[in-house]
Length: 304
Image (cartoon, rainbow, N blue to C red; front, side, top):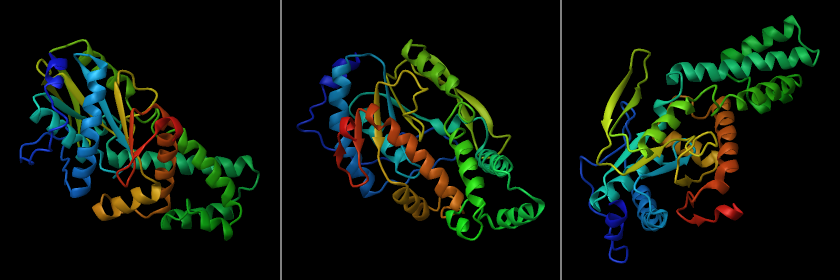
């Protein structure tokens, strides 16, 4: 059935349909997408390539992952791809991976900072340089949130031990099983591939009491698109077509600033988080089926 519907899409004559107010989007509570010309351009370039790859799979259930750095446009482009497929006769659901950390954003951000600082202090002790005076300086740096800033090592050389150890621990937390519930994601993808008609999907807002599950009817939905920074993680199983939206940490940070995603976009700690996430994305780039650059150019996964 899916193969037949895909074969009916004439890519030589295909044109992106006009947008509608009720177009599909990710299922993260409160998630708002703002589609611009850049998103339209990229989705229109990806769609024909994606359909060809879907045809080659010759499967009745297909999982697509749209992943990349924070603020790169995953939500918008995933929504557009789902909309294009739906308008072409292929029902598609957009699943937001941001529902699957263990902690709400406020608490997870706090946990990230706690992991960095707690292990940074251990690094000072292991280096044999920690003392009470140093702790007082750290307290001042914490208050200013400048302790992750590399420039501060010029003022306090001992901070190199702190930052190196803290960053290493942070890298061992971000995007791992310690932070993300990959087991639940894998179970959902398994149930989808096993043709389970109805599947409970998690919802998580920005407050501790904003947690619930919705029962989604997948009986007539052959395609699931997952949009998530960690959608290319090696611990996720069942993805058929991984799509990487590539960007540099600098491009991601600028995008977040323009989008006003949070109040600390330019902080040293946010920069560190983005750099670590980018290392994971670069590491997984060769496993992507499609890579599109920030400028909208296709990149070769084999030589990325």
